[in-house]
Every structure is written in structure tokens, then in C-alpha cells.
Amino acid sequence: MLDSIRTLTDVPVGEEVHLAREDIVAARRRHALQLEAQRRARECVEQARREADAVHALAFQQGYAEGILRASGHLADTLLKTQTLGLQLRNDLARAAGDLLGQALSRPEWLDEMLERWLAGQPGDLGAVLHLLLPLHCRPRGPALRETLGRCWTGELIVEYHPQDRYVLRLADQLLEFDVEASRERLAPRLLASLANLPETVRLLDQASRQALADVYASFTDFAPTDPAELRHED
Image 1: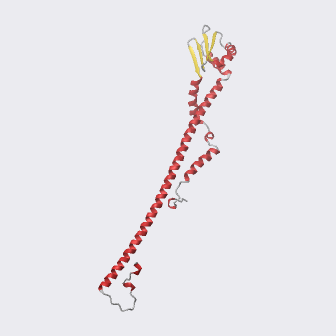
Image 2: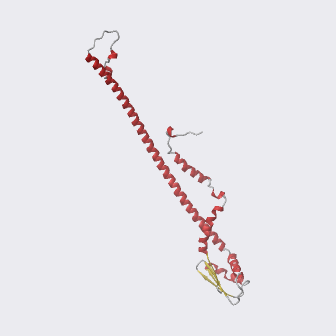
Image 3: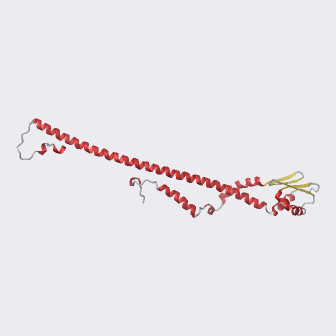
């Protein structure tokens, strides 16, 4: 419709023109309307472009936020697995410490050596009674134990057994008690505390663990922004 409106510039050159004042005013008004229409058209196009950019930016932000949430979820899951694995390793180490102590106590020589060392530090009171209270699993070694003690103790000897995993040695007013389970509980924290002195090689992950960790971190980059404006290049 605007193209059909003739303005003063549309009058052919060289023709003799006689225009009334009203025609001149109307032509100026039509020219002003044309300029206004063009201005509004440009504003509408600019507004549409801004709205399209805003929609695109919002969609990008929502997608990026979703990626961040997924990455955070993966990270939280990894940390939880790491904490669970650490607790499992501590429990396994404490169990291994207990097994190690159990193996040491299962050696027949252990009890003989302990009794000999303890008796060597006691006063030689021949009138005293040496009373031993040992776990039941030591009963088969009773005769051999009496023979061993006969070389370092010539006094009266009483050997009894009980179902607990506990060794009790009494001589006059001297008492020595060794609780296997209590010693195991004391040994485990000391063993865990000694990890700081272990060589670095024991802290290295194997190839499978490193690959699993790399896969987890690689999943974070799947949700990183790909807008060129967000990328930075460094030499």
C-alpha cells in the first residue's frame, strides 16, 4: 500500500505542475507516514531478532544448567563411591591386621617365648604358684607347654582353659593378661596410622582405576558450553 502513495518526488521532471496547498500538505503527510512505517518496520524486525536471541540464549542456558546438574550428580556419585571404597579398604585393612595377629598367635613358639620372657623378669619365689588360664585351642599343646615351662620354672604349675580368646598368667601378686580381640582393636588404628610411611607405589591406581576415573571426568565435558562466544583460546 505504501508503494501506491505518490509523493512530491514522484512528479515527472519537466512537466508543468500546478498543486494546490491542500495537495502539498497531503503529500507531505503521506511522505511522513511512509517514513514512520519504515521506522516501525525496522523496530519490529529488531525486536523480533532480540526475542529470537533471547529464546536461543534461554534454551542454551537451560541445556547448560541441565549439563551442570548431571555433572554434579556424577561427581557426587563418584565421591560417594570413593568414600565407600575408602571405608571398605579401612575395614579390609583392619581385618587383615586381625588375621595377621591371629597367624602370629597360632604359632606354637609364641606362647612359649612369651612365658619364658615373662618368667625371666619375675623374682625366683619357689613357693609361689604359676597359674595359667589359656584359650581352649591351646589344650592340645598342654603337655608340650608343661615340658617347656619345666626348663624355666621348677615351682607348682596350674594350667586351665576357658572358651575366651584371652591369656591370663598369674604368679603370686604379678598378673599378665593378654586379650587377643582387644589387642587386635588397638593394632588396627596403629596400622592405619602407619600408612603415611608407606612408599608412594602403594598409593598408585592401577590402569583400570585410572581409566574409570578418566571416563568419569570425560563425562563432565559432554555438557560443557559449545557456544563460540564461551570458548577461550590460549597460546
